[in-house]
Image 1 (cartoon, one colour):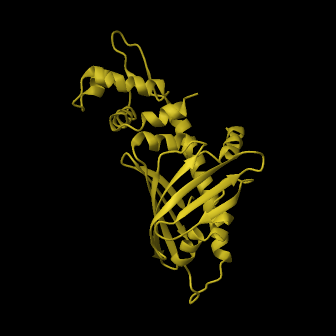
Image 2 (cartoon, each protein chain N blue to C red):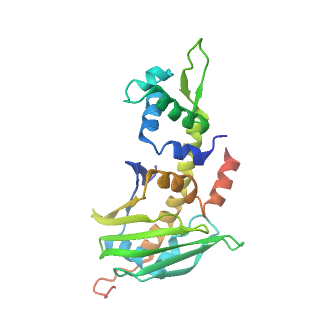
Image 3 (cartoon, one colour):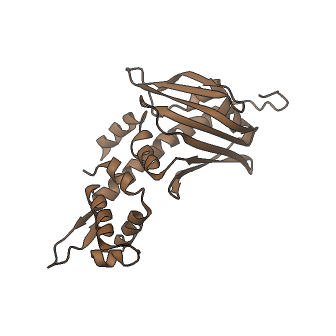
Length: 154
Length: 112
């Protein structure tokens, strides 16, 4: 059974929830320290993040660049709006595919849940069309390998 | 094979989602589908056209009626797509589990 839930809400929200067996502080650090981000925010096997810049302070910018080592790649840029260590991160981001996608406004919360943490991520897209486009075509970037594997299975 | 871009765009509209929810209960005519909405039949027909072009619904001929029904393949394709998006995120979070397990508790250490 999956520990993660991904669902849409209203016309413009996407909600992701996941429980972790670590305290909120560890989650917060793993989301804001480049050396840690580079270890997990990768997508399918074979993809790496050679560039990870994250200036985790209000108004600070971040930039993530991914590559599949075979000439494929894309990047994301964003700005931090609010940071409440070790509880809450609010940022905006957009993907470059290669043109920029509309801004995705993301609130990530880390709430203590027993000995672990409940992470709640709420993405707010500008409108229903943009959300539809993100779900249909934006989020698959970096997931093409999985898709090909899936096609082989069905 | 349904067009996923068109399918997700079709779902971006609340009226079209309500139409799909109604069709999930079974086949329905345009008149029946228009009933719950304060909309003209042409307006509903326009929504049905969008859903049809996205491969989510189909029509049947029954005398002068053209009842609509859900197309399972279209709905399944969206389900599979979302499952794949989920899987990509899950892979990330499974890796994050390992990263967290490897982090030493550093209470007292100054963290930015």
